[in-house]
Image (cartoon, rainbow, N blue to C red; front, side):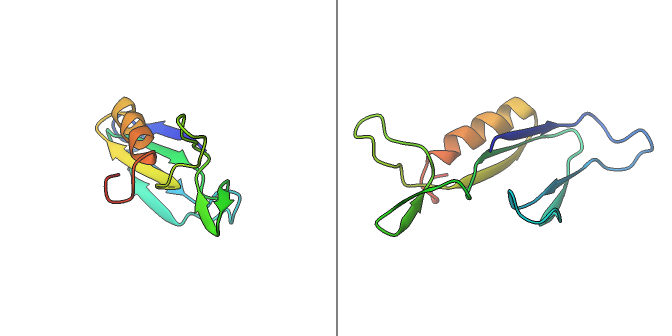
Length: 101
């Protein structure tokens, strides 16, 4: 699942732009709402679509070297100053370990 949102200023009535994040394919209720004024937001990965190997869940990314699943984060969400930065950071972090990401 790759999703992006960018906002410029506030809503016309002065209210904050709110982005709701929910579990994919799950409840329609948001698990968190984020105030997103003058910012970019990006999500990379989908923790429901995984590969299971030896009892461990991996994202769908495969190593170009050996074709094995890459250990790391299943999903990453990033808020940044603009959407391009958020998308880039989320894409890179998605392929890193949890500590490095």
